[in-house]
Image (cartoon, rainbow, N blue to C red):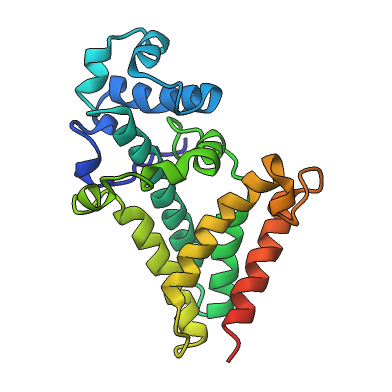
Length: 225
């Protein structure tokens, strides 16, 4: 029997921790599938309440609005990637190998993880690819940033940057390169699928594999001493 794991997210992301109840977990699980199905613009708490056979008021007890729910979902994804990278590099001392593992995880097509049965990582990744920019490209980004809602993304960025600095302690732009590649890991897949002239990745030639090669080239060439 596989133990069910939970990721600890910043409490500013929610009004009530959705991991604390069956309803909260269902809100998160079903919102992932609904957003993926109809897109964030068309997504509403009214539509979600119909899907989970509950009320809009019950959803508002957990999240103040749909944007905050989206931030929660994207934050969960970043925290999950950090967990996976930490787990898979725990006993590895070779910095090149650690960085290669990190690149592989941020660029690969995810499968659902049985350790987190309430979350479909494969579907959530689709949301990250299509919707993640909307979490911070808002007029009030400075205000919500002060609440610490982006701490998971920042933590993942810092972790990857630390691997870079292990390889080249004198590299001047570890955080810039880390955040750029985290963004590119999703944007290049989106471009390959929808705006192909903006990418050299090919939709019908495993763009995830090409993305790994692209990011590895950028990162390791940049770190050459």
